[in-house]
Length: 334
Length: 280
Image 1 (cartoon, each protein chain N blue to C red):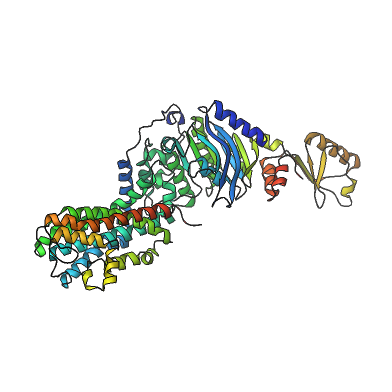
Image 2: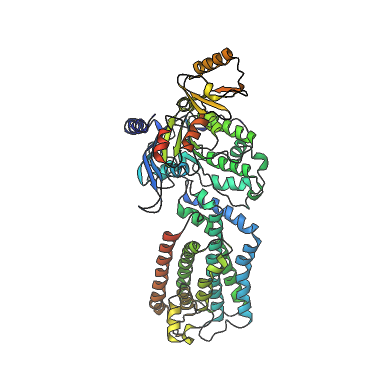
Protein backbone atom coordinates (compact mmCIF):
# COMPACT_ATOMS: atom_id res chain seq x y z
CA UNK A 1 0.00 0.00 0.00
CA UNK A 2 1.39 3.40 -0.86
CA UNK A 3 1.40 6.30 1.50
CA UNK A 4 -1.54 8.03 -0.15
CA UNK A 5 -3.59 4.84 -0.04
CA UNK A 6 -2.65 4.57 3.57
CA UNK A 7 -3.90 8.01 4.49
CA UNK A 8 -7.08 7.47 2.48
CA UNK A 9 -7.78 4.42 4.57
CA UNK A 10 -7.20 6.44 7.69
CA UNK A 11 -9.58 9.16 6.47
CA UNK A 12 -12.34 6.71 5.67
CA UNK A 13 -11.92 5.07 9.03
CA UNK A 14 -11.94 8.33 10.91
CA UNK A 15 -14.95 9.67 9.02
CA UNK A 16 -17.26 6.70 9.07
CA UNK A 17 -16.28 3.98 11.49
CA UNK A 18 -14.57 5.64 14.39
CA UNK A 19 -16.27 3.30 16.85
CA UNK A 20 -14.93 0.31 14.96
CA UNK A 21 -11.23 1.17 14.84
CA UNK A 22 -9.24 0.85 18.02
CA UNK A 23 -6.54 3.25 16.84
CA UNK A 24 -6.62 5.81 14.03
CA UNK A 25 -3.49 7.82 13.32
CA UNK A 26 -3.75 10.42 10.60
CA UNK A 27 -0.94 12.56 9.18
CA UNK A 28 1.02 12.62 12.42
CA UNK A 29 3.97 14.97 12.77
CA UNK A 30 6.15 15.49 15.81
CA UNK A 31 8.89 18.05 16.09
CA UNK A 32 11.18 18.46 19.08
CA UNK A 33 12.34 21.82 20.38
CA UNK A 34 10.34 24.46 18.54
CA UNK A 35 9.75 25.22 14.86
CA UNK A 36 13.43 24.80 13.92
CA UNK A 37 13.87 21.59 15.93
CA UNK A 38 14.31 18.05 14.73
CA UNK A 39 11.22 16.53 13.15
CA UNK A 40 11.20 12.93 14.39
CA UNK A 41 7.81 11.99 12.93
CA UNK A 42 6.95 13.24 9.44
CA UNK A 43 3.43 12.36 8.43
CA UNK A 44 2.62 8.92 9.81
CA UNK A 45 -0.83 7.37 9.26
CA UNK A 46 -2.19 3.96 10.18
CA UNK A 47 -5.22 2.28 11.69
CA UNK A 48 -5.46 -0.68 14.02
CA UNK A 49 -8.63 -2.70 14.47
CA UNK A 50 -9.79 -4.54 17.55
CA UNK A 51 -8.40 -8.06 17.72
CA UNK A 52 -5.43 -7.07 15.57
CA UNK A 53 -1.70 -6.75 16.19
CA UNK A 54 0.03 -3.91 14.39
CA UNK A 55 3.83 -3.71 14.51
CA UNK A 56 6.05 -0.71 13.88
CA UNK A 57 9.48 -1.72 12.62
CA UNK A 58 12.43 0.42 11.79
CA UNK A 59 16.08 1.17 12.34
CA UNK A 60 17.22 2.94 15.49
CA UNK A 61 16.09 6.55 15.33
CA UNK A 62 13.42 5.84 12.72
CA UNK A 63 10.79 7.48 14.93
CA UNK A 64 8.96 4.43 16.31
CA UNK A 65 9.04 5.47 19.96
CA UNK A 66 8.39 9.12 19.11
CA UNK A 67 5.32 8.01 17.15
CA UNK A 68 4.13 5.68 19.88
CA UNK A 69 4.42 8.38 22.58
CA UNK A 70 2.09 10.66 20.65
CA UNK A 71 -0.37 7.85 19.89
CA UNK A 72 -0.44 6.91 23.58
CA UNK A 73 -1.20 10.53 24.47
CA UNK A 74 2.03 11.07 26.41
CA UNK A 75 2.92 13.91 24.06
CA UNK A 76 0.92 16.15 21.76
CA UNK A 77 1.43 15.91 18.01
CA UNK A 78 2.85 18.96 16.23
CA UNK A 79 0.38 18.22 13.43
CA UNK A 80 -2.08 15.46 12.65
CA UNK A 81 -4.68 13.54 14.60
CA UNK A 82 -4.88 10.49 16.84
CA UNK A 83 -8.03 8.69 17.90
CA UNK A 84 -8.13 5.81 20.36
CA UNK A 85 -11.47 4.01 20.69
CA UNK A 86 -12.98 7.13 19.12
CA UNK A 87 -11.42 9.45 21.70
CA UNK A 88 -8.55 11.93 21.74
CA UNK A 89 -5.76 10.45 23.91
CA UNK A 90 -4.71 13.88 25.21
CA UNK A 91 -8.00 15.79 25.52
CA UNK A 92 -9.99 12.74 26.67
CA UNK A 93 -7.14 11.40 28.77
CA UNK A 94 -9.41 10.51 31.71
CA UNK A 95 -11.63 8.34 29.52
CA UNK A 96 -8.81 6.82 27.44
CA UNK A 97 -6.19 5.87 30.03
CA UNK A 98 -8.37 3.41 31.99
CA UNK A 99 -8.88 1.46 28.75
CA UNK A 100 -5.32 1.31 27.46
CA UNK A 101 -2.15 -0.38 28.70
CA UNK A 102 1.29 1.08 28.05
CA UNK A 103 4.68 -0.56 28.29
CA UNK A 104 7.48 1.92 27.67
CA UNK A 105 10.77 1.03 26.05
CA UNK A 106 12.36 2.35 29.22
CA UNK A 107 10.30 2.66 32.35
CA UNK A 108 11.35 2.20 35.93
CA UNK A 109 10.22 1.07 39.32
CA UNK A 110 11.52 2.01 42.76
CA UNK A 111 14.42 -0.40 43.27
CA UNK A 112 13.70 -1.15 46.95
CA UNK A 113 10.11 -2.35 46.49
CA UNK A 114 9.31 -6.02 45.95
CA UNK A 115 7.51 -7.26 42.85
CA UNK A 116 4.23 -7.55 44.74
CA UNK A 117 4.59 -4.14 46.39
CA UNK A 118 5.24 -2.57 42.99
CA UNK A 119 2.24 -4.29 41.44
CA UNK A 120 0.01 -3.32 44.38
CA UNK A 121 1.11 0.29 44.12
CA UNK A 122 0.21 0.31 40.43
CA UNK A 123 -3.09 -1.54 40.96
CA UNK A 124 -3.99 1.05 43.59
CA UNK A 125 -3.98 3.77 40.94
CA UNK A 126 -6.32 1.95 38.50
CA UNK A 127 -10.11 2.00 38.09
CA UNK A 128 -10.53 -1.70 37.37
CA UNK A 129 -7.39 -3.59 38.29
CA UNK A 130 -6.89 -7.33 37.92
CA UNK A 131 -5.93 -9.11 41.11
CA UNK A 132 -2.19 -8.59 41.61
CA UNK A 133 -1.51 -12.34 41.87
CA UNK A 134 -3.27 -12.99 38.59
CA UNK A 135 -1.26 -10.29 36.78
CA UNK A 136 2.03 -11.69 38.12
CA UNK A 137 0.95 -15.22 37.21
CA UNK A 138 0.30 -14.12 33.62
CA UNK A 139 3.91 -13.06 33.14
CA UNK A 140 5.39 -15.93 35.15
CA UNK A 141 6.58 -13.77 38.03
CA UNK A 142 4.49 -15.31 40.82
CA UNK A 143 7.45 -17.19 42.26
CA UNK A 144 9.49 -13.94 42.31
CA UNK A 145 6.76 -11.98 44.13
CA UNK A 146 8.81 -11.22 47.25
CA UNK A 147 12.03 -10.26 45.44
CA UNK A 148 12.99 -6.57 45.40
CA UNK A 149 13.08 -4.94 41.97
CA UNK A 150 16.82 -4.22 42.10
CA UNK A 151 17.50 -7.97 42.37
CA UNK A 152 15.48 -8.83 39.26
CA UNK A 153 17.15 -9.64 35.95
CA UNK A 154 16.56 -7.35 33.00
CA UNK A 155 14.12 -9.83 31.51
CA UNK A 156 12.20 -10.13 34.78
CA UNK A 157 11.86 -6.35 35.00
CA UNK A 158 10.54 -6.36 31.47
CA UNK A 159 7.91 -8.93 32.44
CA UNK A 160 6.95 -6.92 35.53
CA UNK A 161 6.48 -3.93 33.24
CA UNK A 162 4.23 -6.06 31.02
CA UNK A 163 2.23 -7.21 34.05
CA UNK A 164 1.52 -3.57 34.93
CA UNK A 165 0.52 -2.78 31.35
CA UNK A 166 -2.00 -5.65 31.49
CA UNK A 167 -3.20 -4.83 35.00
CA UNK A 168 -6.24 -2.79 33.91
CA UNK A 169 -7.43 -5.34 31.30
CA UNK A 170 -6.73 -2.91 28.45
CA UNK A 171 -8.78 -2.71 25.24
CA UNK A 172 -5.74 -1.27 23.47
CA UNK A 173 -2.23 -2.33 24.43
CA UNK A 174 0.92 -0.40 23.46
CA UNK A 175 4.19 -2.31 23.75
CA UNK A 176 7.48 -0.59 22.98
CA UNK A 177 10.01 -3.39 22.41
CA UNK A 178 8.29 -5.78 24.82
CA UNK A 179 10.72 -8.68 24.49
CA UNK A 180 14.08 -6.90 24.47
CA UNK A 181 16.34 -8.65 26.99
CA UNK A 182 14.11 -11.71 27.32
CA UNK A 183 15.48 -15.22 26.93
CA UNK A 184 13.98 -17.27 24.06
CA UNK A 185 11.56 -19.11 26.33
CA UNK A 186 10.23 -15.95 27.99
CA UNK A 187 9.91 -14.42 24.55
CA UNK A 188 7.76 -17.34 23.36
CA UNK A 189 5.63 -17.04 26.51
CA UNK A 190 5.17 -13.34 25.96
CA UNK A 191 4.13 -13.97 22.37
CA UNK A 192 1.57 -16.50 23.56
CA UNK A 193 0.28 -14.04 26.16
CA UNK A 194 -0.08 -11.29 23.56
CA UNK A 195 -1.88 -13.79 21.32
CA UNK A 196 -4.37 -14.53 24.11
CA UNK A 197 -4.98 -10.84 24.78
CA UNK A 198 -5.67 -10.23 21.09
CA UNK A 199 -7.93 -13.27 20.85
CA UNK A 200 -9.95 -11.60 23.59
CA UNK A 201 -10.62 -8.64 21.30
CA UNK A 202 -7.93 -6.19 22.31
CA UNK A 203 -5.87 -4.25 19.80
CA UNK A 204 -2.09 -4.32 20.17
CA UNK A 205 0.40 -1.83 18.79
CA UNK A 206 4.00 -2.89 19.25
CA UNK A 207 7.45 -1.88 18.14
CA UNK A 208 10.21 -4.41 17.84
CA UNK A 209 13.74 -4.95 16.63
CA UNK A 210 13.10 -8.62 16.06
CA UNK A 211 11.82 -9.41 12.57
CA UNK A 212 10.77 -12.93 13.60
CA UNK A 213 8.67 -11.31 16.35
CA UNK A 214 6.89 -9.11 13.83
CA UNK A 215 6.41 -12.08 11.48
CA UNK A 216 5.06 -14.23 14.32
CA UNK A 217 2.77 -11.69 15.97
CA UNK A 218 1.77 -8.94 13.58
CA UNK A 219 -1.35 -9.11 11.44
CA UNK A 220 -0.06 -5.99 9.73
CA UNK A 221 3.08 -3.97 10.10
CA UNK A 222 4.76 -0.81 8.93
CA UNK A 223 8.45 -0.23 8.37
CA UNK A 224 9.53 3.26 9.38
CA UNK A 225 12.58 5.19 8.28
CA UNK A 226 13.46 8.82 8.96
CA UNK A 227 10.11 9.54 10.56
CA UNK A 228 8.03 8.11 7.74
CA UNK A 229 6.28 4.85 7.01
CA UNK A 230 8.16 3.49 4.02
CA UNK A 231 6.13 0.36 3.51
CA UNK A 232 3.12 -1.22 5.18
CA UNK A 233 0.96 -4.33 4.87
CA UNK A 234 0.86 -7.92 6.09
CA UNK A 235 4.28 -9.53 6.58
CA UNK A 236 3.62 -11.74 3.53
CA UNK A 237 2.56 -8.79 1.34
CA UNK A 238 5.59 -6.78 2.30
CA UNK A 239 7.97 -9.64 1.61
CA UNK A 240 6.22 -10.28 -1.72
CA UNK A 241 7.32 -6.83 -2.92
CA UNK A 242 10.89 -8.01 -2.75
CA UNK A 243 12.61 -10.43 -5.17
CA UNK A 244 13.58 -13.97 -4.33
CA UNK A 245 17.23 -14.84 -4.07
CA UNK A 246 19.28 -17.59 -5.72
CA UNK A 247 22.84 -18.00 -4.49
CA UNK A 248 25.56 -20.47 -5.48
CA UNK A 249 29.28 -20.86 -5.99
CA UNK A 250 30.84 -21.52 -9.42
CA UNK A 251 33.37 -24.32 -9.74
CA UNK A 252 37.03 -23.53 -10.51
CA UNK A 253 37.61 -22.41 -14.05
CA UNK A 254 34.05 -21.21 -14.62
CA UNK A 255 33.58 -17.49 -14.94
CA UNK A 256 30.42 -15.58 -14.09
CA UNK A 257 30.44 -14.06 -17.55
CA UNK A 258 29.58 -17.46 -18.98
CA UNK A 259 26.29 -17.57 -17.06
CA UNK A 260 23.18 -17.48 -19.20
CA UNK A 261 21.05 -14.36 -19.30
CA UNK A 262 17.86 -15.42 -17.53
CA UNK A 263 14.78 -13.32 -18.17
CA UNK A 264 13.65 -11.30 -15.13
CA UNK A 265 16.79 -12.18 -13.27
CA UNK A 266 19.30 -9.63 -11.98
CA UNK A 267 22.85 -10.38 -10.97
CA UNK A 268 23.31 -8.80 -7.54
CA UNK A 269 26.78 -10.18 -6.97
CA UNK A 270 29.15 -12.35 -8.99
CA UNK A 271 32.33 -12.72 -6.89
CA UNK A 272 33.16 -14.85 -4.97
CA UNK A 273 29.62 -16.19 -4.84
CA UNK A 274 26.92 -15.54 -7.40
CA UNK A 275 23.74 -13.96 -6.06
CA UNK A 276 20.74 -13.54 -8.36
CA UNK A 277 17.52 -11.68 -7.64
CA UNK A 278 14.33 -12.73 -9.38
CA UNK A 279 10.60 -12.19 -9.23
CA UNK A 280 10.04 -15.67 -10.79
CA UNK A 281 11.93 -17.99 -8.53
CA UNK A 282 10.73 -21.29 -10.00
CA UNK A 283 11.22 -20.30 -13.63
CA UNK A 284 14.61 -18.71 -13.05
CA UNK A 285 15.81 -21.63 -11.01
CA UNK A 286 14.68 -24.14 -13.68
CA UNK A 287 16.50 -22.19 -16.33
CA UNK A 288 19.66 -22.02 -14.25
CA UNK A 289 19.60 -25.73 -13.43
CA UNK A 290 18.98 -26.69 -17.09
CA UNK A 291 21.98 -24.61 -18.08
CA UNK A 292 24.15 -26.23 -15.39
CA UNK A 293 23.01 -29.73 -16.34
CA UNK A 294 23.60 -29.10 -20.04
CA UNK A 295 27.11 -27.90 -19.33
CA UNK A 296 27.81 -30.48 -16.70
CA UNK A 297 28.60 -27.73 -14.21
CA UNK A 298 28.08 -28.35 -10.51
CA UNK A 299 26.79 -25.35 -8.52
CA UNK A 300 28.17 -25.47 -4.99
CA UNK A 301 26.19 -24.44 -1.88
CA UNK A 302 23.11 -23.77 -3.95
CA UNK A 303 20.39 -21.84 -2.15
CA UNK A 304 17.04 -20.56 -3.35
CA UNK A 305 14.50 -18.76 -1.21
CA UNK A 306 11.62 -16.32 -1.44
CA UNK A 307 12.01 -12.93 0.20
CA UNK A 308 11.28 -12.64 3.91
CA UNK A 309 10.60 -9.57 6.00
CA UNK A 310 14.34 -9.35 6.48
CA UNK A 311 14.90 -8.40 2.82
CA UNK A 312 12.31 -5.65 3.10
CA UNK A 313 13.77 -4.39 6.34
CA UNK A 314 17.35 -4.42 5.12
CA UNK A 315 16.37 -2.69 1.90
CA UNK A 316 14.81 0.12 3.93
CA UNK A 317 17.77 0.29 6.28
CA UNK A 318 20.32 0.19 3.44
CA UNK A 319 18.61 3.06 1.70
CA UNK A 320 20.47 5.23 4.17
CA UNK A 321 19.53 8.70 5.14
CA UNK A 322 18.49 9.81 1.70
CA UNK A 323 14.76 10.11 1.67
CA UNK A 324 14.25 9.56 -2.06
CA UNK A 325 16.30 6.42 -2.21
CA UNK A 326 14.46 5.02 0.78
CA UNK A 327 11.17 5.49 -1.00
CA UNK A 328 12.44 3.81 -4.13
CA UNK A 329 13.53 0.96 -1.95
CA UNK A 330 9.91 0.19 -1.33
CA UNK A 331 9.63 -1.28 -4.77
CA UNK A 332 13.08 -2.23 -5.96
CA UNK A 333 16.09 -3.80 -4.47
CA UNK A 334 19.31 -2.77 -6.15
CA UNK B 1 3.07 -18.67 32.18
CA UNK B 2 -0.58 -19.57 32.54
CA UNK B 3 -2.79 -19.34 29.53
CA UNK B 4 -5.24 -16.51 30.02
CA UNK B 5 -8.87 -16.84 29.19
CA UNK B 6 -8.73 -13.42 27.65
CA UNK B 7 -12.34 -13.45 26.49
CA UNK B 8 -13.51 -12.94 30.03
CA UNK B 9 -10.83 -10.36 30.71
CA UNK B 10 -11.45 -7.99 27.87
CA UNK B 11 -14.73 -6.19 27.78
CA UNK B 12 -15.20 -4.42 24.47
CA UNK B 13 -18.56 -3.03 25.53
CA UNK B 14 -17.11 -1.43 28.57
CA UNK B 15 -18.80 1.94 28.95
CA UNK B 16 -16.74 5.03 28.34
CA UNK B 17 -17.70 6.28 31.77
CA UNK B 18 -15.66 3.76 33.73
CA UNK B 19 -16.19 4.29 37.44
CA UNK B 20 -13.16 6.37 38.23
CA UNK B 21 -10.97 5.46 41.07
CA UNK B 22 -10.95 8.23 43.62
CA UNK B 23 -7.86 10.38 43.77
CA UNK B 24 -7.68 9.65 47.50
CA UNK B 25 -7.37 5.90 46.92
CA UNK B 26 -4.57 6.44 44.40
CA UNK B 27 -2.71 8.78 46.76
CA UNK B 28 -3.11 6.17 49.49
CA UNK B 29 -1.55 3.47 47.27
CA UNK B 30 1.40 5.72 46.45
CA UNK B 31 1.74 6.77 50.09
CA UNK B 32 1.99 3.16 51.17
CA UNK B 33 4.71 2.41 48.60
CA UNK B 34 6.62 5.59 49.39
CA UNK B 35 6.45 4.91 53.16
CA UNK B 36 7.87 1.42 52.60
CA UNK B 37 10.72 2.99 50.64
CA UNK B 38 11.39 5.55 53.38
CA UNK B 39 11.51 2.82 56.05
CA UNK B 40 13.95 0.76 53.92
CA UNK B 41 16.25 3.74 53.36
CA UNK B 42 18.05 4.03 56.70
CA UNK B 43 19.93 7.22 55.80
CA UNK B 44 16.82 9.06 54.71
CA UNK B 45 14.98 7.75 57.74
CA UNK B 46 17.64 9.09 60.14
CA UNK B 47 18.00 12.39 58.27
CA UNK B 48 14.31 13.11 58.20
CA UNK B 49 12.95 11.46 61.31
CA UNK B 50 15.66 11.94 63.97
CA UNK B 51 18.15 14.61 62.91
CA UNK B 52 15.76 17.62 63.07
CA UNK B 53 14.49 16.56 66.50
CA UNK B 54 18.06 16.11 67.80
CA UNK B 55 18.99 19.56 66.48
CA UNK B 56 16.06 21.18 68.24
CA UNK B 57 16.89 19.32 71.47
CA UNK B 58 20.52 20.48 71.19
CA UNK B 59 19.45 24.11 70.71
CA UNK B 60 17.15 23.87 73.72
CA UNK B 61 19.87 22.34 75.92
CA UNK B 62 22.44 25.02 75.01
CA UNK B 63 20.02 27.82 75.84
CA UNK B 64 19.84 29.04 72.24
CA UNK B 65 16.08 29.21 72.55
CA UNK B 66 16.07 31.54 75.58
CA UNK B 67 15.16 34.91 74.14
CA UNK B 68 13.67 37.84 76.06
CA UNK B 69 10.96 38.75 73.54
CA UNK B 70 9.69 35.19 73.01
CA UNK B 71 8.27 32.42 75.15
CA UNK B 72 10.84 29.58 75.20
CA UNK B 73 8.24 26.82 74.86
CA UNK B 74 6.70 28.61 71.91
CA UNK B 75 10.08 29.08 70.25
CA UNK B 76 10.82 25.38 70.75
CA UNK B 77 7.69 24.50 68.76
CA UNK B 78 8.45 27.16 66.14
CA UNK B 79 12.00 25.87 65.63
CA UNK B 80 10.70 22.32 65.18
CA UNK B 81 8.17 23.52 62.60
CA UNK B 82 10.85 25.39 60.60
CA UNK B 83 13.33 22.49 60.72
CA UNK B 84 10.51 20.18 59.65
CA UNK B 85 9.65 22.37 56.67
CA UNK B 86 13.26 22.80 55.53
CA UNK B 87 15.11 19.60 56.47
CA UNK B 88 12.20 17.22 56.03
CA UNK B 89 9.63 18.58 53.59
CA UNK B 90 11.99 20.57 51.37
CA UNK B 91 15.24 18.59 51.46
CA UNK B 92 13.71 15.13 51.59
CA UNK B 93 11.27 15.84 48.76
CA UNK B 94 14.00 17.16 46.48
CA UNK B 95 15.88 13.90 47.09
CA UNK B 96 12.77 11.75 46.63
CA UNK B 97 11.52 13.43 43.44
CA UNK B 98 14.98 13.34 41.88
CA UNK B 99 15.49 9.69 42.79
CA UNK B 100 12.11 8.72 41.28
CA UNK B 101 12.84 10.77 38.18
CA UNK B 102 16.27 9.19 37.65
CA UNK B 103 14.87 5.67 38.22
CA UNK B 104 12.29 6.45 35.48
CA UNK B 105 9.53 5.83 38.01
CA UNK B 106 7.87 9.19 37.34
CA UNK B 107 7.93 8.49 33.61
CA UNK B 108 6.28 5.09 34.15
CA UNK B 109 3.67 6.48 36.58
CA UNK B 110 2.74 9.11 34.03
CA UNK B 111 1.56 6.43 31.58
CA UNK B 112 -1.17 5.42 34.01
CA UNK B 113 -4.56 6.76 34.89
CA UNK B 114 -3.62 9.23 37.58
CA UNK B 115 -2.68 12.84 36.92
CA UNK B 116 0.55 14.71 37.59
CA UNK B 117 -0.67 16.26 40.82
CA UNK B 118 -1.66 12.90 42.28
CA UNK B 119 1.75 11.40 41.43
CA UNK B 120 3.63 14.22 43.16
CA UNK B 121 1.22 14.40 46.09
CA UNK B 122 1.40 10.64 46.67
CA UNK B 123 5.20 10.78 46.90
CA UNK B 124 5.02 13.77 49.27
CA UNK B 125 2.53 12.47 51.83
CA UNK B 126 4.89 10.28 53.94
CA UNK B 127 7.44 13.09 54.18
CA UNK B 128 4.79 15.59 55.20
CA UNK B 129 3.46 13.14 57.78
CA UNK B 130 6.95 12.87 59.29
CA UNK B 131 7.18 16.64 59.75
CA UNK B 132 3.67 16.69 61.26
CA UNK B 133 4.58 13.86 63.61
CA UNK B 134 7.70 15.70 64.79
CA UNK B 135 5.72 18.87 65.38
CA UNK B 136 3.09 16.92 67.33
CA UNK B 137 5.67 15.10 69.48
CA UNK B 138 7.50 18.32 70.35
CA UNK B 139 4.23 20.18 71.03
CA UNK B 140 3.15 17.44 73.43
CA UNK B 141 6.58 17.33 75.11
CA UNK B 142 7.07 21.09 75.56
CA UNK B 143 4.72 21.65 78.54
CA UNK B 144 6.68 18.99 80.45
CA UNK B 145 10.05 20.67 79.67
CA UNK B 146 9.47 24.36 80.06
CA UNK B 147 6.72 26.91 80.55
CA UNK B 148 4.46 27.35 77.55
CA UNK B 149 2.18 30.31 77.66
CA UNK B 150 -1.27 30.06 76.09
CA UNK B 151 -1.04 30.97 72.36
CA UNK B 152 -2.28 34.43 71.41
CA UNK B 153 -3.84 33.26 68.13
CA UNK B 154 -3.50 29.53 67.34
CA UNK B 155 -4.95 30.03 63.87
CA UNK B 156 -1.81 31.82 62.64
CA UNK B 157 0.73 29.01 63.25
CA UNK B 158 -1.72 26.44 61.83
CA UNK B 159 -2.21 28.46 58.64
CA UNK B 160 1.53 29.18 58.44
CA UNK B 161 2.43 25.48 58.75
CA UNK B 162 -0.14 24.35 56.16
CA UNK B 163 0.80 27.02 53.60
CA UNK B 164 4.51 26.53 54.41
CA UNK B 165 4.22 22.79 53.77
CA UNK B 166 2.59 23.27 50.35
CA UNK B 167 5.06 26.04 49.47
CA UNK B 168 8.18 24.04 50.40
CA UNK B 169 6.83 20.94 48.62
CA UNK B 170 6.40 23.04 45.45
CA UNK B 171 9.81 24.64 45.97
CA UNK B 172 11.25 21.11 46.25
CA UNK B 173 9.63 20.16 42.94
CA UNK B 174 11.08 23.31 41.36
CA UNK B 175 14.56 22.60 42.80
CA UNK B 176 14.69 19.20 41.08
CA UNK B 177 15.30 21.10 37.83
CA UNK B 178 18.81 22.05 39.00
CA UNK B 179 19.47 18.72 40.72
CA UNK B 180 21.07 16.02 38.60
CA UNK B 181 20.82 13.15 41.09
CA UNK B 182 19.84 12.54 44.69
CA UNK B 183 23.46 12.97 45.88
CA UNK B 184 23.79 16.48 44.45
CA UNK B 185 20.58 17.40 46.26
CA UNK B 186 22.77 18.02 49.29
CA UNK B 187 24.36 20.91 47.41
CA UNK B 188 21.44 22.29 45.42
CA UNK B 189 19.27 22.57 48.52
CA UNK B 190 21.93 24.47 50.51
CA UNK B 191 20.90 28.03 49.56
CA UNK B 192 17.33 27.57 50.72
CA UNK B 193 18.18 25.42 53.74
CA UNK B 194 21.15 27.42 55.10
CA UNK B 195 20.30 30.99 54.12
CA UNK B 196 16.60 30.35 54.58
CA UNK B 197 16.98 29.22 58.20
CA UNK B 198 19.86 31.54 59.17
CA UNK B 199 17.96 34.65 58.12
CA UNK B 200 14.50 33.44 59.12
CA UNK B 201 14.59 34.83 62.65
CA UNK B 202 14.49 31.39 64.20
CA UNK B 203 18.11 31.55 65.51
CA UNK B 204 18.14 35.27 66.37
CA UNK B 205 15.79 38.23 65.84
CA UNK B 206 16.27 39.89 62.44
CA UNK B 207 16.19 43.29 64.20
CA UNK B 208 19.79 42.78 65.42
CA UNK B 209 20.98 42.65 61.79
CA UNK B 210 21.94 45.68 59.66
CA UNK B 211 18.87 47.25 58.06
CA UNK B 212 19.40 45.90 54.52
CA UNK B 213 20.25 42.36 55.60
CA UNK B 214 17.20 42.29 57.88
CA UNK B 215 15.05 43.49 54.97
CA UNK B 216 16.41 40.70 52.76
CA UNK B 217 15.71 38.19 55.51
CA UNK B 218 12.07 39.26 55.78
CA UNK B 219 11.47 38.32 52.15
CA UNK B 220 12.98 34.82 52.35
CA UNK B 221 10.54 31.88 52.21
CA UNK B 222 10.86 30.58 55.79
CA UNK B 223 10.74 34.00 57.50
CA UNK B 224 6.97 34.64 57.19
CA UNK B 225 6.36 31.21 58.75
CA UNK B 226 8.56 32.17 61.74
CA UNK B 227 6.85 35.56 62.05
CA UNK B 228 3.38 34.03 61.96
CA UNK B 229 4.41 31.46 64.61
CA UNK B 230 5.86 34.22 66.82
CA UNK B 231 2.70 36.29 66.43
CA UNK B 232 0.33 33.44 67.11
CA UNK B 233 2.28 31.57 69.79
CA UNK B 234 3.99 34.38 71.77
CA UNK B 235 1.99 37.41 70.64
CA UNK B 236 5.27 39.00 69.52
CA UNK B 237 5.32 41.17 66.40
CA UNK B 238 8.32 41.42 64.07
CA UNK B 239 9.61 44.56 65.89
CA UNK B 240 9.50 42.67 69.21
CA UNK B 241 6.41 44.36 70.73
CA UNK B 242 3.56 42.44 72.31
CA UNK B 243 0.21 42.37 70.50
CA UNK B 244 -3.36 41.38 71.39
CA UNK B 245 -5.49 38.83 69.54
CA UNK B 246 -7.12 41.46 67.33
CA UNK B 247 -3.81 43.19 66.63
CA UNK B 248 -2.26 39.83 65.70
CA UNK B 249 -4.55 39.58 62.65
CA UNK B 250 -3.44 42.98 61.35
CA UNK B 251 0.21 42.19 62.05
CA UNK B 252 -0.21 38.87 60.22
CA UNK B 253 -1.16 40.45 56.91
CA UNK B 254 2.34 41.30 55.68
CA UNK B 255 4.01 37.93 56.47
CA UNK B 256 0.92 36.14 55.13
CA UNK B 257 1.19 38.12 51.88
CA UNK B 258 4.89 37.25 51.55
CA UNK B 259 4.10 33.58 52.15
CA UNK B 260 1.36 33.59 49.50
CA UNK B 261 3.70 35.27 47.01
CA UNK B 262 6.29 32.53 47.67
CA UNK B 263 3.57 29.96 47.18
CA UNK B 264 2.80 31.44 43.76
CA UNK B 265 6.50 31.67 42.83
CA UNK B 266 7.20 28.07 43.89
CA UNK B 267 4.11 26.84 42.04
CA UNK B 268 5.04 28.71 38.86
CA UNK B 269 8.66 27.48 38.97
CA UNK B 270 7.56 23.89 39.55
CA UNK B 271 5.01 24.03 36.73
CA UNK B 272 7.58 25.56 34.38
CA UNK B 273 10.75 23.61 35.19
CA UNK B 274 9.77 20.25 36.68
CA UNK B 275 11.05 17.41 34.47
CA UNK B 276 9.44 13.98 34.50
CA UNK B 277 12.40 12.09 33.09
CA UNK B 278 16.19 12.38 33.17
CA UNK B 279 17.94 14.73 30.79
CA UNK B 280 19.32 12.67 27.93
